[in-house]
Amino acid sequence: MRTFSLASIALAATMALLLPIDSEAAMSKKQQKLYPPKDQLADVNSPQVKEWLKLINWSKVPKLAKTKAEIPNCPECPATKDIPKDACWWTCNGCVAKDDIEVCPQEKAWGLTYDDGPSEDTPRLLKKLKQANVTSTFFVVGSRVLEYPETLHQQIKDGHHIGLHTWSHAGMTSLTNEQIVAEIKWAEKIVFDVTGLKTKYWRPPYGDVDNRVREIARQLGYITVIWTKEWDSNDWQIPDKTITNKEVFRNFKWALSTVPKLKGGVITLEHDLFTQTVNVAGPLLDMGMKKGLEPMDIARCLSDPHPYQNSLVAKKPAPPPAKKPAPPPAKKPVPPAPAKPVEAPPKADSAPKEPKAKEPSEAADISKQSQRPSGAAQVAWSAGMALAFVAASAFFTL
Ligand SMILES: [Zn+2]
Image (cartoon, rainbow, N blue to C red; front, side, top):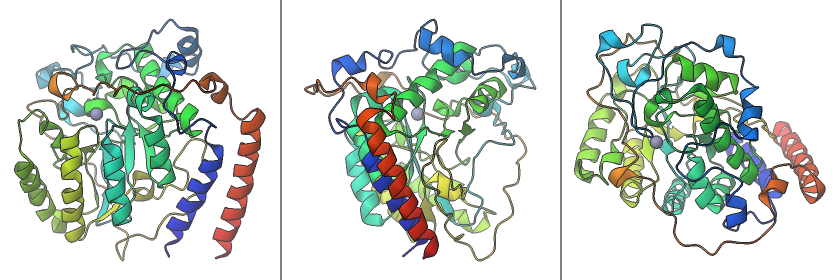
């Protein structure tokens, strides 16, 4: 058995003890009111956001202007000459910062990521991943977690890695500094309230990140994960009917044909928001594995033993899939600007789905959960820590 799996099991078992008592129920309307309205930018004058703003040393944040976009869409890219040289704006001129993650370092390593969920189709994907004995990173949208908290629990229980994809899926460079903080922190808060985990990795919607956005995210403890050029599955275009399943498979087949020439691994972009995108996820997984790629979550792709800001159990990195370690990914020269934003606009057909009518549970006020560990949760926390210790001890003595 892989040692990594043991650590994952220990983490999952520990987290099962830490989950809020009413965690399996959908959030009540009362609980939902503790968060900003779904799919909308939060009020930056709220006491909560004002507290979060104090976390930032603003003197270190580059004074770049907001880009122009019809919020929450991705900004239209201006002419390259009009992009400030110090912006390092990935979406519009492909600039990558030193600490951006766009590839997995090891050969044949496949950073498997799904964005924009959880959704009603996510459980179907989880079933497929379980059958394939694969873990992935889900970059979740806070507004979707509000609708499907029970699915987020299942993702954790299944050993998957969770990263953030903001509260409302707005193009980050078009927001004010205060809105950027609110978008990240509200998403972080709901994931923490539901799971007890404080996330550490995030993916900006549309990959829309520049040096202003990066610095704010960095100061909040986040590592920015984008994806490998040419490895966007473009599945997001299927619901828009601008691409067919067949074309998605053909494009992916072409990307797979480049694997022998790659110096490291890759990170793909897929989505678990729509039925159509989940429909192609299984076949894409099979295709990649058949070609010798080893799918894994981002924490494992980076051999990060602490995939959360408050990790309880250290995940031991899995042995590298390649016999010899590949050199660190070369920083590529800036590629030409893409003709259009690299990820789907969230509105129109690809707008986040409206929630299914669910009977809300009138269980305990989630604000109490967010103050964990306390009371009964303190017991769960202590039990979790004890189990973590035992699991870790057992793990390291194996
Ligand atoms: Zn997205």
